[in-house]
Length: 231
Ligand code: ATP
Ligand code: MG
Image (cartoon, rainbow, N blue to C red; front, side, top):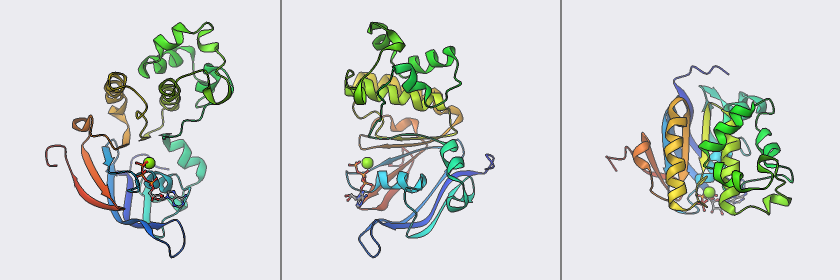
């Protein structure tokens, strides 16, 4: 996949229903995200935000319309390309019954110790890990049982950062965090987003000033679209 396309992601009149002939969950979505751009999708629960992500990742294909990644129809991209291009953090974090280190290295097994330390700091995890008896080698147990929801989420964030993919997709990635931690994390994301295309999905209107386009989704349609100042 050429990385130099003007647009990293393009939705061209995309509509989608989970069942053939069923209710359209997305309707005539037209959206372009330029390479390096930062777009926030906001909207009430059930408006179709996560469905957009599922289409990008090709869990599903549009019922009509075209979805492009770096100028190419995603249906022509290999799944390996798609996964390599995107670093995704969704509402459901998945941690394995392994150590914290192993959970992080899943994203990029060859990462150095220095790189691990860096993402741990960026994900606001340093203190948490320092408090654990075995630090990074702490076994986190089945589905991360030994960690709080916010800690699990920060491990998943660190893992996504370690992957260092050109397109960052954060679907309510900071929803389980307290406002202070969330604010700190979004501050670091600001630096991280500098050289990445970012799609930030949230139903909280925080940090919108960091984004260059805000899209308001309602009942599967784009209701409003513009900059923070415009909306
Ligand atoms: P939230 O803010 O709660 O995460 P959302 O905007 O991400 O909401 P989606 O998860 O995209 O909303 O869901 C949009 C609609 O699609 C909802 O009505 C939901 O019930 C429906 N939906 C989601 N997944 C499926 C599925 N696999 N099969 C059928 N319907 C689904
Ligand atoms: Mg969702």
